[in-house]
Amino acid sequence: MGWTLNRQVVLVNKARAAILLIATSAQAGSQVQGVPVPPPAVSPVPVATGLVHPWAVAFLPGGQFLVTERPGRLRVVSAAGQVGPALAGVPQVAAGGQGGLLDVVTDNDFARNRRIYFCFAEPAAGGAAGNSTAVARATLSADASSLQEVRVIFSQRPKVESALHFGCRIAQASDGNLFVALGERYHRKDDAQKLDNHHGKVIRITPDGAAPPDNPYVKQPGALAEIWSYGHRNPQGATMAPDGKLWMHEHGPQGGDEINLPQPGRNYGWPVITYGENYGGGKMGEGTARSGMEQPLHHWTPSIAPSGMAFLTGTRYGAAWQGSLFVGSLKFGTLHRLEVSGGKVQKEERLLQGNGERIRDVRQGPDGLLYLLTDSPQGRLLRLQPAAAP
Image 1 (cartoon, rainbow, N blue to C red):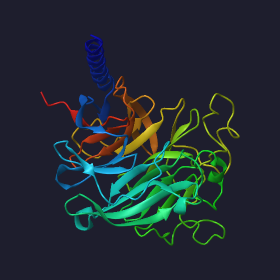
Image 2: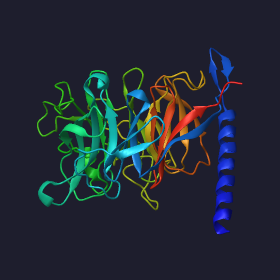
Image 3: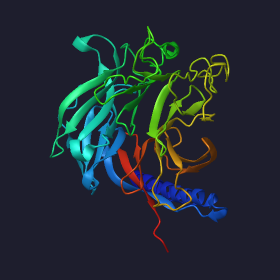
Image 4: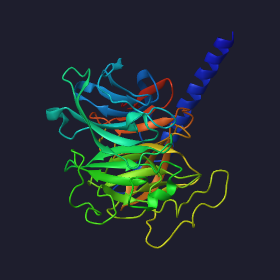
């Protein structure tokens, strides 16, 4: 009886979520050359289920998916949605709190070299205390059952005892260099303003892990050569825009989640300036602005706990959405569509209201559709399906 009642409640909630989704999609349209364009009707369709706290999804040839699970497993999901066994070759991860196996991306030239990059919470060597975010490079075996030639190409310094704020998003530029967004490890927030560590930084490295010679601090004594920008808190999304620029977002404390466009050598303010406040209330830092520190492109106050980030370049959803930036929310389970023009967010639309699932990752697939990961012990890979044309 109780199971039947719960099932009925779930079905009612799902129906309400579908109604909310359709209503949200119908609320706002866009314009192309001054002509109103109706927004598309969409629905989240399950591709795969039963994933354990999935964190990131990348796309493989033939419609397959590569998915990380935070406890330390990497899996291939077939085009039909079958979840494969854990791949061999994943290094030991410090799984706990917010740490574990985190982001994964395929190399720009994956079709030729089958190379992937992934980041994870790396335990200190020899059983010592502490951990840090690390980036590894590997080759996916021809049968997609294991990782080969695994090599850690970057380790955040210093290692600290913390299970929080690993950051860990990777974006590869067209020149092959990697941007990696790193958290400040929470208790080490003041490190974000110092250049002698990697906490609260965006770094830029080559596929071999070296600092490119045109990084801003390569020749500065006392500064780490990998640093691209600093003053970040806990980045949870990063992507390359269609024009080749890096976009990222990061969690604020209580309020003040930010979208930033990290520029070389620029200071993005944390923890000196923020639009958020201390947990439980109270001023954080000096306020919202200070000379020499960058303002966010966009911020959410109160927080949405953003995660995942992708520009939509495909046409599968029609002209209303093409060129939009999509960001997931862990806090509300919503998907945020941002219309960007002139380097500014002009409009924001909230989709999937009432969904009730933490959205961990957002990616555009090779088919031009959006894919989402939900963060739970029974996480799902979802495809945002446009309604069939009438």
